[in-house]
Image 1: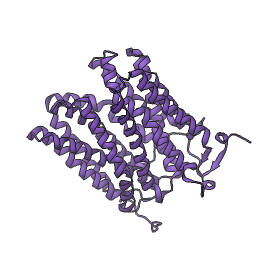
Image 2 (image 1 turned 90 degrees about the vertical axis):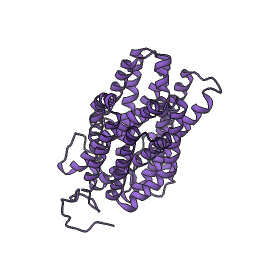
Image 3 (image 1 turned 45 degrees about the vertical axis):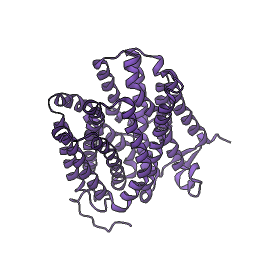
Image 4 (image 1 turned 90 degrees about the horizontal axis):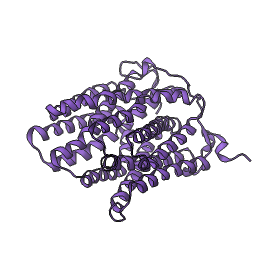
Length: 414
């Protein structure tokens, strides 16, 4: 009998399987395993490079630039899946991420940290690209918003576990960076190994195109991805920085904000998925972008009018919840896409999403020196543009009915 990991099982044959044993169970395992390494790296790397590697601002800037390059080059996934299956690439990418994080503290030089950053970033970005593709191929359209909401909650729970364990044990047990990074990275590698041994290779009914494609009818999806990436960069780079610069937040206070965010996502992730399913992608994204516009304007008001720290902290949490509604972009694409286009378009979209990451943080860093409020005003303007794009999504999107400009000849299937 062939090992289970070498068995190819069509998705149709998994109907009636226990949830944990089928493709959704594997996606849940993926969602739990990746953040253990990644969240630990995010929360500990800044202190490590300063305290151990003696990085200055230039070193840190180069490291961040290197970290984003694999995201911009995620389109390379298309070439890789021509030779190996997407599920296998997802497992290999998790191993790359976990292994690189595990050895971070053992290579504290500038060269060593650039090397581990490149490897972990390739693992992270290739995993995210393939994982998005597998989600859209494996999850039924009618269940997609709800299931994606649950996967968001699982990922937030894993991040919360990593952060909480670090907060509770770092000083209590006088942990070393070597132990923390090695434990977190190894946990992700072991979960990937379990996923490899326990699950067969699931086969979607539609074989994927193994070359780069850019289809004119997906233009709105591409535009939504670009704007999402640009807004996300402003938030990731400057929101937490504002909490430190403007209000003097210390490490444990910033970490507490992260913990609150993950708890909120665990609670509201499934509710957000349900809301997208009920409202439809158009209304959900319009609600998100109106909310983000107000949040970014309020961030600017903190600088212009001196609004307080409580409001700033509340906005930080609310901002995360609004961004969680971006899962509607995935389900919108799932509805309009040819099934065989999902994998190559996921790679193209991930690259488009990261275009802004190459230049926007550095450019806006100079704006920040002159007028921090202007950075958030620009983010609010981007949210308004995104709102305009969301209004172009039809109530019932589908092939041939990707935008409100297309006339649908047949009634949508309910």
